[in-house]
Image (cartoon, rainbow, N blue to C red; front, side, top):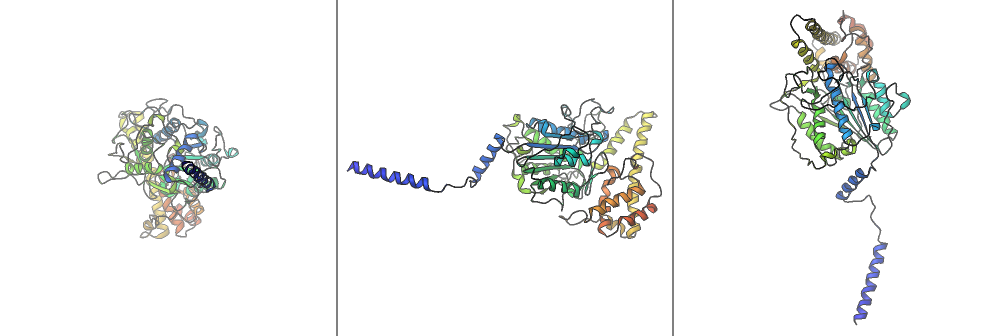
Length: 488
């Protein structure tokens, strides 16, 4: 009896095993959420995610713009500690700060009042006049033959690679500055990102953008289906902010007359400095940076950080793009931001005034240096006044004194691009500058006025004819001069 029972059990067991082997197995892609997360983490660990690329660009020059190159150098140190190779990190910076005669610490750049040198080891791939729109686009597209000068490094990426882009500079509605002309316009940048996607040479791309009105670069332009996720320092209609500025809190060391960083930029980088980026997501960092950068009831200084494009990418870990410092492997992410808040900051457009004023204030009375500093400050103010008054007068000539200001300052509904005809906008800028002088970095604030003139159906030829009435003369200063070219 016992023998027959054992035989029956053996037969039952063999039937069950055969059935189990014949049963269709689930597809490997059909996993529980926890299994998918574990698989993604394993993929990040073994490098099967492809190559990480980083493009870091400071779009300004001049010691008064110290902070932009400081931001970029700090970002490089994060990438380097995160494990990215120099061959995959491409740096654009004018490189006129570290060894500038006005730098109180020659050969050193800092991005925090108590911070160390962030300049050491930074590869200067494209410097001076090599920092331009043409080279930036060629690098993004991986087009070696289109690059002029520099190291020749480009984003030679493949379909499984991840790309991180960080751009720090001045900006205006629909435009980003460059130390060389022309400036970079939102439609051209998004077109390049579309071309990169069409070429199939990346898996996903993250773009961090520090500039005034930086939201306008992507608003109504960046598709949500090309695997590009962007965050910006401000929305489409407000300034971004400089920080660690003289006379503010926290202040730079007293020997510095310029801002050391930008509020949005130092917020994401100081977060990246201390957290384990293998476990922190893009979305988590976005929320922390948004909170730290936003104006508050007791502190009106700040801007509204925005996100655009393929928002589903923000669930990914930062490690996928910028690596992670092994020293932070045991750092636990918390939703409450432990980084310090700011009691004061400086509007990006006024940061150069802070520099020129500090420089003038410190010089000895009656000295040639003080006279030079006074001349520089007056030239900056004259340029600003000339640009503001000229554009206001053009608006009045076109639309009448009652409607001019209303038309020029009109803001479109959220989700709409700045302008319908970008070619009109660029031609409008050239028409203005040909008669009234350069907009320069300050004048970028008026791009919305030019866009609204186009949106009202006015052609650039009309502005070209009436501009001489608004601009009977051009101030003789380096800011207003067009000897370097046009902004568009």
